[in-house]
Image 1 (cartoon, one colour):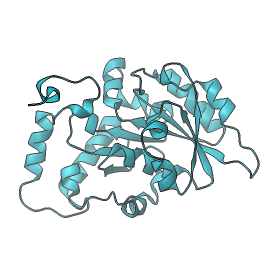
Image 2: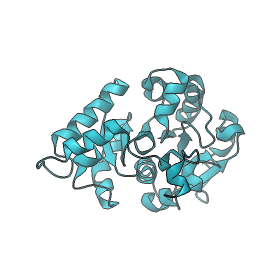
Image 3: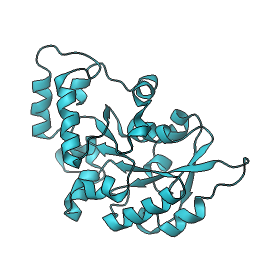
Image 4: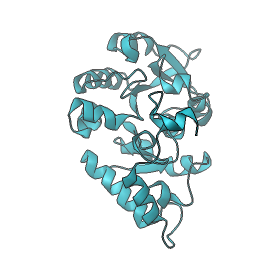
Length: 246
């Protein structure tokens, strides 16, 4: 047995195994046959559970990985000539091997500095400038909750950033790989850190919260989901046995 297997790890919750409740659900969903590609009751029930969690009747889609969730969400917002404002420590900027640009056809990341891995309204405003045709046009603001350094955006902070983005015609993507941790730490309703704060699309993490794999994309701006089903398929992230992801 290796040292990693003998002791708990604080490097990342990716080190942990499957939560017992998730493992039981996984085994139950594995019994018998079910329609493929998400046309099954498990996927419908999981999507409905996400909608109840946020008290919002909105499109919900599942993908296997967090990188796919973030990149496909941003690709739903951005055209190839667009840009995404994010923190310099953001996972989309540091740890996703250019996936946002690849899946959007070329969208550029505009990284900003900020204390505690948090984007400030001032830093965002300075970077979210639409110049002439020689520069990419900022069309998305990507935030992380909880951040890569474990800090948190309070609802009012998210709201201020979302207001600044929407005033400029920019949509807000929230990387919620650790979203459940933020909800627990802040003691608020999930909706307070999502649509009530002005988030347009949330990558709601499951892998870092006890699941074997799987993330939910929650489109609070339903117009962003209009072509998502095909975009997910084209990117190779439509699982045939979707019930096991859901």
